Length: 297
Image (cartoon, rainbow, N blue to C red):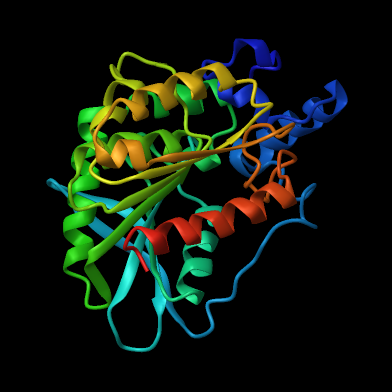
């Protein structure tokens, strides 16, 4: 297991670790036992949000993607009806309880929340203990495959009895936040997106494009929620993307950013030391307002 965080393949991961050397050692030691994605859980127990499934239809499901089946989780109000849908795209660690809880939070508010594991072909990344292995496995997912899976997920959603097929939105954190930009430029059935600190720079060869390359031709407006002190996503890159949006189509021009001063990466991840309650709660309310304003409510 790597103990030198400077060797991490994804610069965004640097900001996911505790600030002190002793804190990092403890975090990495915990990761060797429970998996990198969940290592902060016991330390951050006081901030973890746990949403009951009472009053919901919620559980693990399988989504057909090509000839395969992708693990997923869906939560919806128990009452019959047609509800707007929000796709929740996981971080680089893949699907785990954090994303499932977000789906339940959304379902409590009258949405169908659905998340999936985009990295399932490489195994369960949330349980891997070597961060280099986690990133390496995640980086194997080519954008072509990722976008094909998004298309299949949207097609699956359209067949669900409680899903309003004309009201589909997408949100995601970290690597999932990057997917928001790429997916909404690709799939015309996604009405609006909210990207939480989605990566803007190219990382592996499997991702030949960045959000800068597609942001001028969005199929729906995107709200970007970013930290002003995120060491993996410089403010200069956010500003550069804003210029691309301004020169783009009407959806691109309608897109907006919220930059939280002094806040780092993964500020919404309530199970990690990076969690910042004030910014996370403000971003959540802005996300809901964004979806409402753009036809996903």
